[in-house]
Length: 548
Image (cartoon, rainbow, N blue to C red; front, side, top):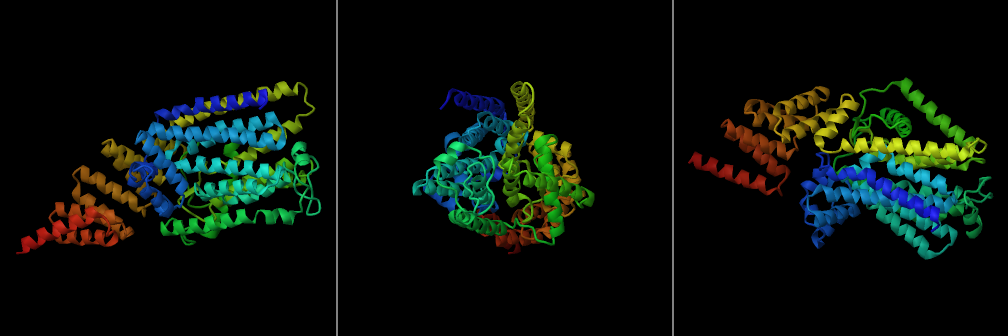
């Protein structure tokens, strides 16, 4: 490794670690951290034969990602439920990803400082805070690690073909899919890299970039290959993507996480996708008002949709027209568009319109466009090196400060959702999560206020009624709690916990027949729950005794 390359690697490691060490003071948050770690007995048992078997067979949390589950198990075995250790693992993986990204683009292009700037943007961009500072988003940083090792192995194969290099890339890709299935678009990224900067694409099958990205790779590697053969070469990767997509769709449907067309019409999905693409570009350039959840709008402004189409179409047209002279523009733009496809909302899962975490891999393409584009456009500038170095330093410094501040919003649940409510509107889920955080701290009046606001925004939100009922119970307002529970089971008759809690609330007002009915419903819905069965047996025995 050359001296300058070593300096870049050390800088990236130190700068990234220095900024993200702030996560060491952060707690778990009440948004999926309970599901993934805090209340998950399978994870807390550590790495055991039983937990390994569970990781590979479960579709818990509407996902199949055994490698991610195993990483959480390892953390629990090492750190227990001390959040500092879990945060540290995320930071370490993010640091590795940063270095791997630099080595990847420097190896492919030989452009040291352009690659360094791309890696620095990746390391310190505020949009990436969610992926790193959120324990439950381990799947993001972990899958990206395997994404980058796959690309590195593939580039080694492209330079010096051999079955073991190809197999290494394929195995790394499989591990990445088992960490997070968002990587299904990776085979298309391999084809893009064949075009630029690896320059493996033959003129016989299409146009070849006029300016190869790395002459050394081109000279050392095999002869250029027609496009059809390059596509055939990727068939095993596409097969893994198809398999992963099928498993993911099954898991999400089993977890009732996929929205129907009645819930989310196709035109709304398309409008949201277009606006989300434009919003990702905007937040990449100006990363402000970042929240953990951006709610879907009730309706879309078609003028805004038209503006998004104009922006996206303009960039795409420019990248295509300039592809011979500046192939990195087309590759970077297609990288961005392609890697967002699995999470852009055409297959609708959840209630968010977009999410910062989804940008972790995609905006690398935008970073490439900016880094290589500015470098090419500034060739004739006076004092070019000084201007570029100073500009890069300012950008990195500003992003570091904003990222440091953004990490602070993840300190705990109350800080996270208070900030999210500040930067979004009509966010009923953020209100509910804020209500949960205040309820946990005994701030019952404030918690009830957030629940009522959430239900004002979304009157059919069943978890809101359950939480409000719990708060009313703590306040001694049993009749109000019973009313909320009845509304909850009306909205979701299969919520076993709501039936169970309603049973206890009815017991408190001596409505034993009604309580028995709802305890029975809880057992019917979830017959494996020991608490439900024990309570039903005890209440049934008491009822029989009273009858005698």
